[in-house]
Amino acid sequence: MESIFIVAEKELKDQITSKRFIAILAIFMLLALYAMVTGMESYNKSLQYYKNDVASDNPYRQETINSMQKQIQDAEARGASAQEIQSLKDSLEYYTNPPMPSVLQVFSSFALLFSILGMILSVSMGFDQVSREKEEGTLKTVLSSPMYRDALINGKSLGAIVTLAIVIAATFLMTIAVMLLYGVVPVADDLLRLAVFFIAALLYCTVFFAIAMLMSTVAKNSAMAVIFTIGIVFLMLIFSILSSLIGVTVAGFVLGPEPDAPVDQMPYIVNTSTTETVVYKNDTAGSMEPVPIPVPTYSPETEKYYNYMNKKFLVSSQISDVLNTVSPIYDFSGFLGFGGNSISGAILSKQKPYDPTSSYWSPYTKTISVWESLSYVWTKVLGLIVEIILAFGLTYVAFMRMDIR
Image 1 (cartoon, rainbow, N blue to C red):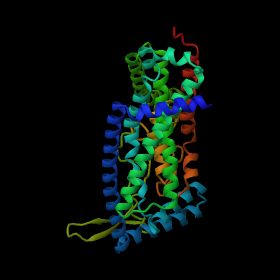
Image 2: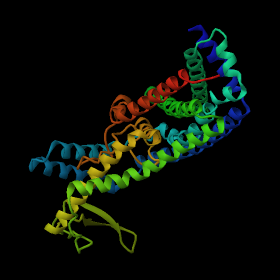
Image 3: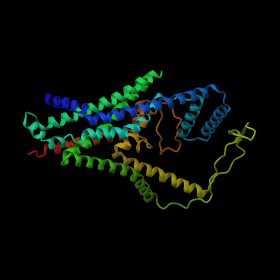
Image 4: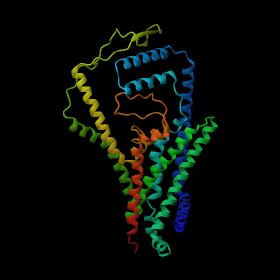
């Protein structure tokens, strides 16, 4: 055990004094600072808009509240499902007591930052872990001393992971410090979510370090290790793109032929008798005139078509989501930070993630705890952990069987 810590300490010193590591770290910190400043500006604008909206006497809000109350009464009277009624109540609660903007939106752009630069930093630390030792001829010298192979590989891994943890922690601490300078103080729940986000970011970066280290072990030299690692990352990106097409194709086979598209492009009529529920529109004089909300009335052909398309979207989304679980990029932040119920999105949001399986999902849900947020993405967290174990396990086996003569 002592030899593992000795190797880890040496690896930590080598990493933080490496010119390559320092250059990538400098770029990483600068972009993190930029993301933080723009995030603070966006948060301040959202906060000011919230204050102005709450302070203003907006007639539309009261009419909307009255409309939602009437919809809830109608839904309860006709025996609607509990899910539909709860969705309406959540929307009513949102308009009655709109939530303040969360300071966590400052970290929202960090998902994309870690997706790209975190991956680059991790790969740069891992692609020559073993291959450099082989090229320089130091691997044979090290193992000829009282040093077991498992202690060497475990020590190198531990030192690199500690280095990644220091980099991510420094980024988070810098961001929180600047937030305090802006006069923004995170509450306890925000700090807890940031701590969980830190762990998720470390897991994400460790996946790519483990992959790069595996390639460094099996490749003949560092150049080939880089090529292999880039190839794997490229295949992950391609797989994330193709998974959507695969999901749509499989859903088409499961659900059968697609019905003919309806001819009517606007499959509803305005029910002018619905005078209880109103919205407002601007007339030419600039005043606000109440008008009835359109009530959808679908033809049988139109309803059949849209039911089929909704089922196809649901099935294809479930298939592509399962396939994308093998992609750490998609698991952590969606496809390059966009879309998907990602780990970072679930942690940084205090609302229930989008549920494509629900017909009555509402974005205006009540605030949930960080543990409830994680419950929606636990399979993605498990996916990252499995990928780390698999990559390190293969590295361990390959290194133990390596011929260093």
